[in-house]
Amino acid sequence: MGVAELTPAPRRATPLPLGPALRTQQAAELSRRLAPHITGTLRLTVTDNRAVIITVQRDSKRRLFTVRLHHLFLDAPPEVLRTTSCSATDSPRASSTCSSTDSRI
Image (spheres, rainbow, N blue to C red):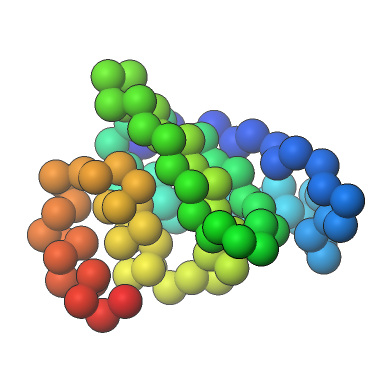
């Protein structure tokens, strides 16, 4: 199981429609749901970006994955999160799961 580190998103002129405490709680829950599919450390930021819904930076040597996900992923079903984790980490551990889920997304 991976280790999760949460980082706050930079302040925006137009904040997410939820209060900061609720956003932090939801980000922690999303991180908890992603962690079983990631081997390494996940740094997750939930965003309200209008153009990009997922951004990933990989540091394979340190097994560190910095992921920025749009808040629409907060309620995503397990198979979407599993596929998102696979593509974010490019993890061989989950490749068989990813290939079966990719065809449905």
